[in-house]
Image 1: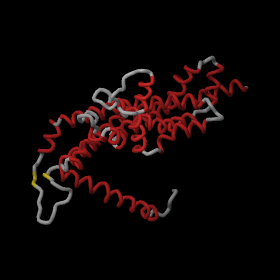
Image 2 (image 1 turned 120 degrees about the horizontal axis):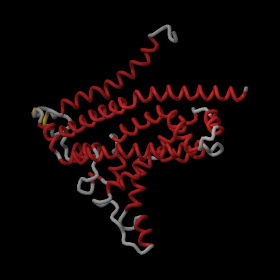
Image 3 (image 1 turned 180 degrees about the vertical axis):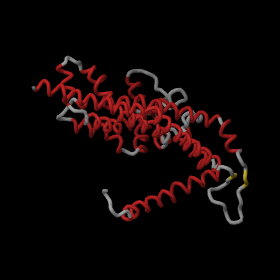
Image 4 (image 1 turned 45 degrees about the vertical axis):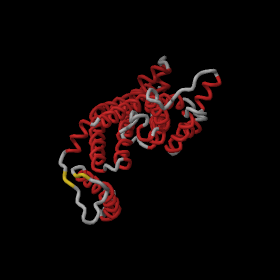
Length: 314
């Protein structure tokens, strides 16, 4: 047994548990309670009582077109994070894993956007997208083209997605590159001897061996899409234009602090939590068995490669 005495463990665990209880679970329960009342402010003033309205906020949630639009945008972002964030990160990780001398440099360069504040990235891209004097329109005008309203109704969602996705590619790149480093080089060497091309090595060795890490990255990307807030808010405050670029987080913020409708914002917050739990459980259920099979398959591949190398050495 690693720890004979249990009380030191509780000594360290209890403060963390209390912290979560006070700052997460109790406010969450309070948030559920607030969704059933008509709240004009966050805290009731002396002598003020909030009116109980039952499920009115939940009925409104089901019929609110802005919530529907924000939900669709959030679901789109989930799909895009898997395709572009994890997908591009995987391609970059595979290519960089082939470079030994400059690998640390590439790791630093690709991870750098992750450490930059999302607000700073939003302001930077806002300068790119400006209609008057923005960098993109200056380039177009240089070639004799008309300036484009990059944050207009037709392009705003795409233009917001670009920096949002770009800023986190490096995060999944580092995770996948670390996973690639755990795959023994002997397997690739044995495959090369057998005449297996680089593409086939990626398809038959890299992907099966990397599946557990890959599925973890997908889970993080999908759940992370629910938390998208600061960068879209900087680029398009209040879901501009016309509320078309709202995500669940930005619409909840506008409802609470822009419209002072705290009870309805509490209902939206509950929707985000429920959606996050459902999505994470769904992704986990889809990948759980596959992860176990992937680990078993990777183990068998390593054992087979080791036997092949021993036979060749003999």
